[in-house]
Length: 81
Image (cartoon, rainbow, N blue to C red; front, side):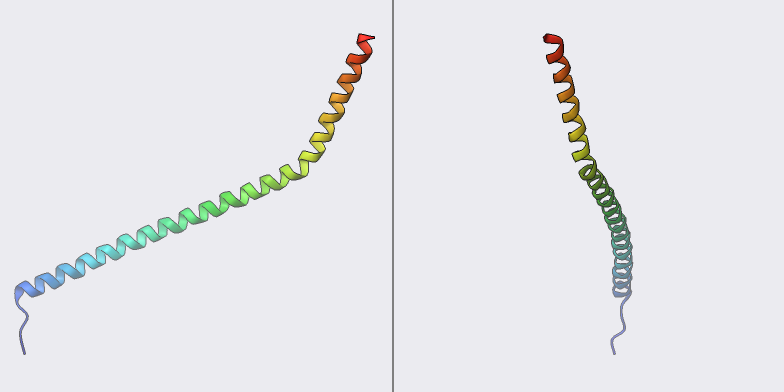
């Protein structure tokens, strides 16, 4: 059986340490990506709620604006006579 040399042991130890560091970095990036994904989902949910509210309010607002335009037009026509 061949005994590993000091150089081989040092090299294997260095590889192991580099792999641990790489795994820690990947884990941190994965956590950051997960947080970013959760934040994006929350923003999309809020946007959907806002759009839903706008879709419900817009027809009423358009009716009110149309009525106001008609009223102002009627007032102007009445004053012009």
